Length: 60
Image (tube, rainbow, N blue to C red):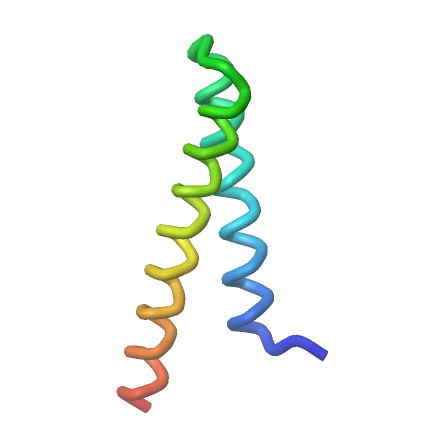
């Protein structure tokens, strides 16, 4: 159903999003700010991992 690179990307993105959201909430900010920062961290992670996996595939 999913390939290994796709599963790796989705799992890592979910982990980074949850950690960024939790750290923002622990810092004492409001929950909308925490969700926005978690979403931004997840989007940045996903774009970086996709770019890295594409570069790896091109080298092969």
